[in-house]
Amino acid sequence: MRVVATAGHVDHGKSTLVRALTGMEPDRWAEERRRGMTIDLGYAWTTLPSGTELAFVDVPGHQRFIANMLAGLGPAPAVLFVVAADEGWSRQSDEHLAAVDALQVRHGVLAVTRRDLADPAPALADASARLARTSLGGVQAVAVSGATGAGVEELRLALDLLTLRMPDPDPGAPVRLWVDRAFTIRGSGTVVTGTLGSGTVGVGDQLELAGRRVTVRSVQSLGRTRERVTAPARIALNLRGVGRDEVARGDVLLTPDTWHHTTEVDARLSGTAELPAELMLHVGTAAVPVRQRPLGADTVRIRLSEPLPLRTGDRAVLRDSGRQTVAAGVLVLDADPPALKRRGAAAARAAELATATATFDAAAEVARRGAMRRAHLRALGGEVPDGMNTVGDWVIAPREWRRWVVAVEAAVVAWAARNPLDPAIPLAALARELGLPDESLAAPVAAESGLGTSGGRVRLSVAPESLGAAEESIRSIEARLAADPFAAPDADVLASLRLGRRELAAAERTGRLLRLAGEVVLLPSAIEQAARLLGALPQPFTASQARQALGTTRRVVIPLLEHLDHEGRTERLDGAQRRVR
Image 1 (cartoon, rainbow, N blue to C red):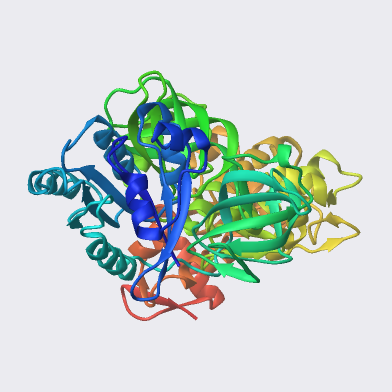
Image 2 (image 1 turned 180 degrees about the vertical axis):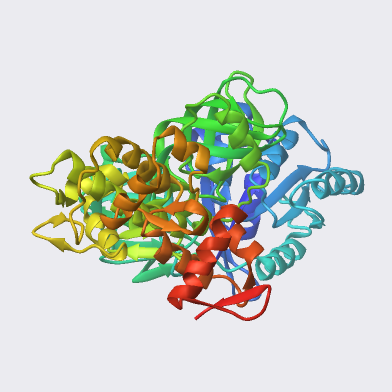
């Protein structure tokens, strides 16, 4: 099955054309048929010459019903754009094409109607040129008459060719069904309809609606009862567990636990004329008031009045409800953006978004946060990327993991100094000291650092001794090296802290510090850390490459490499290169 929405100016013959193609009446309300004008969304379907089933969502053309038009067009992957030969391009033609372009609809057919009333050639040429300048590009154009039937078969063939060009959605993708109708059938209960854009829905499935679980009692598509329906499709679902007054247009049915509901998104705009701060965001069949905050030349932070299940790559429309016009197209770049709290944060964020794409980058998202839960990552549309540390439900960026591991020993030492009678630090306290997002990570991080746990506590293998008057200065050096493991203090810093050879030797004896040649002072854990980082380099490597990998200076890296050579961790190959053994 394929789904196409109509578009075009009011009274240009959209509904008449759908009736001619399907033999069905798309206008559902008596008032629509009496006035000869579509007010709400209409639905009809037909079988094309190839055997493909094609469903139509017929949208209203009048300016007063633009919100209804956007609800029909939003979930549709293709459009049948209609222009009357006797009237030509009109005001709402512009408005509907702006919405099509804002949503970046790329598949369509142009139908110029009323060829029996006027020469269709001028309207065909004008409309084709206008559509070619939008996301639709060059489309097949057909002149028809819904009244006489002339050209209808040619239009059916054009629609058949259109369906062949439309991509197939992923049948295994999580469901997100935007509701466009909700009603009650006596003896059955609540029924909702919508355009299924991806995924599969079947009888007995559990779906999420406004935070609660509902069950699919039965499924219909194109008037027939089905066991399962795969996207793309127009479907009607009879739901168990929800009353008619609990669901309406704009609500959304979801595969449970697979979508992130957000009230803020960072987005790129198309048609970036100056916008008012308050607008309406139309996405799927939903329409919610929003406020926008400009970030860059074409990027904004959009704050929604209510949470919606959105992802990177989603398309939406911003509408100026005061002027009743399409203000801009929206491409969601980040559905879970960082807070903008510090001075200059908005400008920095704009710079990041300038090169952002519509593809979710799972590795970048984990790196930005440092760590995140698998479920959160999946809800944003990603899977665990290669090269990440994983502990239980947590996915951790390598750099954050290394930072935690390096900081463990200093945290334990500091705790023992503050608590000499109980020097083993509880895991909960260690998690707080390291800034871990969850206490369950404390034990694995401690184990990675070389320290084990016993009874929910972590201790050094040898308890540190107090160094009397030098204790405060030694702690200062430990804190400095915990933050930057290879930034060894120089002689001036050591002198200012009154740390001479005797004091440093005492700290080394108690396992607090490690002294290398040239009075280079590091934490003992720096050796293991250096070996891991150097082992990740292409082998062999130079001292300059080692210096860059460790983020330090030549003063530090040369004695450190000599120490690693002496311990047999590295091997010198010639005057310039080494390798990790």
